[in-house]
Image (cartoon, rainbow, N blue to C red; front, side):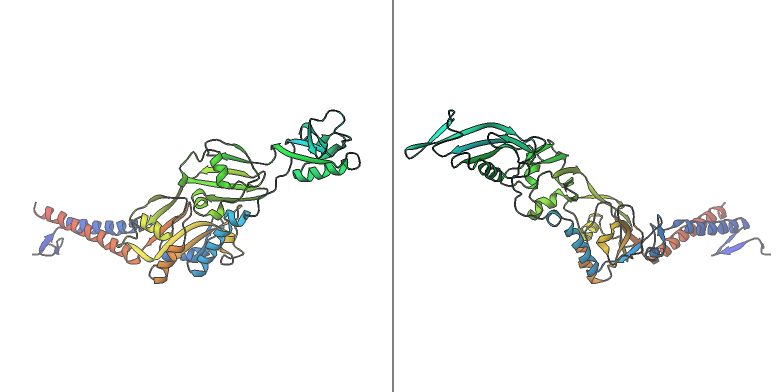
Amino acid sequence: MRNSNRVLIGSRPWTALGKAVLLAGCVAGVSACSSLGGAGPSTGSIRDAADENYSDTGIQVIALGPNVLAQLNAHSAARSFAEVFGDGDVSPTVIGAGDVLDISIWEAPPAVLFGANGPSERVSLGSELASSTEIPQQQVGEDGKVTVPFVGRISVAGLQPNQVEAIITSRLSGRANDPQALVRLIQNESRTVTILGNVQSSGRMVLSARGERLLDALASAGGTSAALEQSTIQLTRGTARATMPLEQVISDPRNNVGLHSDDVITVQHKPFSFVALGAVSQNAEIPFEGAGISLAEALGRVGGLNDRRADVKGVFVFRMEVREAIDPVVDPAQPSTSDGRVPVVYNLEMSNAQSLFAMQDFMMRDGDVLYISTAPGVELERFLGALSSTAFSIVATGNALDNQ
């Protein structure tokens, strides 16, 4: 008579205990499956994120295409030093408060004002001598003025030396005999730029008439104190300000712009990196050079997509993007952060051959998150693998009990 408490599995009868073990194992397998989860959100859930919120700010999901790439690259170029500050003529040498002037006045014979009291120098003009008088060096006061004998107080701040010469000769006309003036700026305290940050020697650099440029100022400060490829340089001129990786300034001479008085140059040590997550060969924070890398190069640095797990339609780059960079693609009603950025997810479908070219034009930025979603069938495969493993464990346990 067959024992009703036995169950036949294969050719081996099991007791009710074995049945309980099998049932428990199956439940455990299903439970294990529910806890498997994925490496992150699926492709579909990310694309649906546009209807959800991120810190009370809508997420914009944007497919990477030619129009989007052209706009991103144009915005990046518009923020370069060459575009923000231009590269016009060398700013003229003007006089400012604190500068020191050397003034000489010449008078043709017969000298009336500057020849009667023992002129400091005489120059032969035929049979007669022209007289010159050197006035003690004059420091421009806070009011922007200097004092010249027989001329009085004159305002020189904001003027070029030749303009001051014209003022002096004009005021001496009718009092001196054919007066001439020579004005030299011998100590420039007002026409300077400031360089600070991660340089060997912070300080001020005097601008000369030849027209110094951005890299000249950096060289005068002894260069950077950190690795060049990990340095950024910020130029501030009045209310305008722009920041670029130093490597880009060096590689593109257009961005080595001419300096103006009162410019402020700040060098910062800022290593660049992005984070790679999901179905890639290596989940890690990946550093990259200041010159920048493309999305194609970024994928290469993490070993590419995981062949067995990755969804070729699920290549995403998460970024807090400047609104102007994606207008008019971004929804005008989408709120932005206090510094004008909006959360954006760029999507690239690598199943499309055109995307292989697009990924070479899309440049990664510091702080980006590169995420590769898992292919839909992979989770089912993981579930079946877990279930199979559990089933074989139960069989092995049953065999061991049956042999006792």
